[in-house]
Image 1 (cartoon, rainbow, N blue to C red):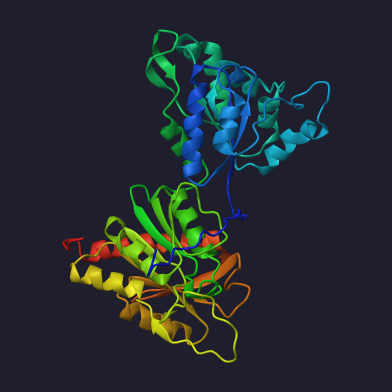
Image 2: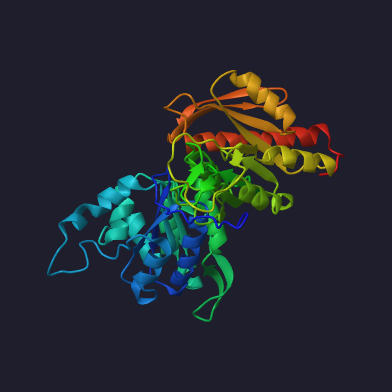
Length: 431
């Protein structure tokens, strides 16, 4: 609530993002329940998870569990769920899944499934998918210690390793069968980390808190009208997605958009510039990076009308400037003698691009400004693509046109590089 007004609740819709898709095979064994935790870890890093269960796995965990967690249909058989009414689409589903995934992860994988993979046996959906996909394959074994150490299992694992299959070695300890030794499924965090590494997703933001603002702000005129701008929030949401993939804890402060935020982000929804400023200033000291991607309105209406203004000829609005959130952060950090958090702003310009961005960089005491030309419709507001220049006190780095997610990754790359450079130049300065 601001000035007695309550922020509106804006409908959220899912939009298409460059989301990597993982096929998670779950085979039979008591460790099957741990696959639910693996789903959660992968989703927290912005990955889409398609679960495939063997018949034996369904004896330990119901498919509904994974459907609820993943939000996706769980594949449980080769030809659909009904023998009397075969699903023709299911007959080739293993091919469509094989072509759409970025990685096949099987966790837990039993000795039986390892043997099928090694020998090329394809008598269910999971084993057929293994033969049909060209995506990287990771397996995380779980079984009795004697089964794990049996020469047949060791030979099959060696075959798979030679083919490039990555094996997440099981741990040692007390097993469900009562024996002690190797064969316990690796920890879900370890399996998720191996998957991310296989996909080339660096976890270089692990342990970092990234505060991101996104979208426009709406400044009310009366109960039905507002001042706003054309920002869709797509760049800020892409930054949140990218930071999550790289291991960060993300706090997303969003103005009104129609976008569905990443589920693992801590999202705070606001309407006005005043609300956004309050949300940011309440949390800035806990962040290690702050990226101000929101298009915050420069002005608000001085006198809000409590009732709808009736049309009656020309109308004049008296506007007052909103606080500059990034400049406030720069001043707070400077007054505290801190070098943290890193402050990165956005300069949406239509002319004198580099000159205006450098002026903002100095005035706001930021570490970098991300300059983008919003006069170009193919990379401006509402576009799924962007081209930016990352402006620092000593450099101007062009990021060529690409998807906003790829641009977001480059912005994060430079944010880390800037911090490392500053630490090398002033190692004794307090942060």
